[in-house]
Amino acid sequence: MPVPDLDQRAHLVAPGLIGCELWVDGVGVRIVEVEAYEGPDDPASHAWRGQTPRNAAMFGPSGHLYVYQMHGHFCCNVVCGPPGTAHGVLIRAGEVIEGLDAARERRVGVRDAQLARGPGNLTRTLGITRADNATPLLTGGRVRLLPGERTAAVAAGPRVNVSRAHDRPWRFVDPASGSVSAFKWHPATRTPKADPAPA
Image (cartoon, rainbow, N blue to C red; front, side, top):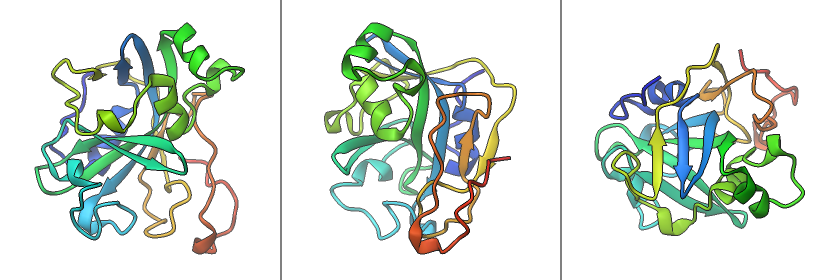
């Protein structure tokens, strides 16, 4: 399956990234979980209040990486949409398909299925840091987004631990993958704490 057209809105790009591959210096993961964020129209987005030095990469052209730090770890997003719209797709989880020895060294004692399970674990497994912010993904840079194998199904549901716009079904997963991260509601949503089981 090809890489989706990254000039589209994030919630349209996101399901097409399931099954694509993200590669860094010989370590590759197959993407199995993502979340869409749509800039100034999405109060859960880092770009909701406008451009800052931290989120500037989101406002640039599509096909670049936006990297930010949260709770001591890095998270990476595929920038999409027309320039200035600040749409992005958070890569939440992947399955290691190449470079397993290097991935294991970076995440000692972790089961293979959990090496890149969760956005911070994924960047640790791949070696992505803030230094990779704004790097191009489609032109042979250090971080590369590549076509992959289409999944049998893609499931959609609410985003993980989001306090605003939490009802938007913009989390997309490969329901057959054991590397999809655990779901939890944000306490501020006051929503029943059952896992919505994306469908």
